[in-house]
Length: 177
Image (cartoon, rainbow, N blue to C red; front, top):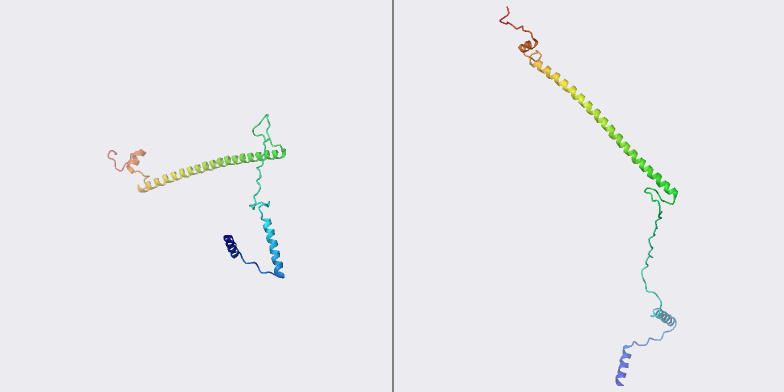
């Protein structure tokens, strides 16, 4: 019994002293705080059905599935099986337009290649003609240079020229008389 009395005395010494008696406005505020505290304890009781906090997550949307339309019989490559006739016609015309554009580009390339070949042929002919005239002019100038160096005798020594021309006249042949 003495031990029990000592334990209660120790507990009483450890417990805070009772609050002083409040009056007026302080008593009303203390009562409001006590009411608020009881509301909080009842809301936080383990039996409450409140869900825990979590981040908001976006609902996952499924991917749209497009089921293809099959025609069982008579598949033709290149044919448009679009059920929308206007859209199919538009695609067909766009395909034709692209094909025509490619054909036109191809024709233009052929034409340009042909014209380039023609221009190149004309240029090579003109170059060949110029080269021929230059060769003739150079030959003429070389002949004139040779004449000038030989003393104006046509590029030949006089003795040789007489022999070539067949004139047997010389300056004082011994057998003539």
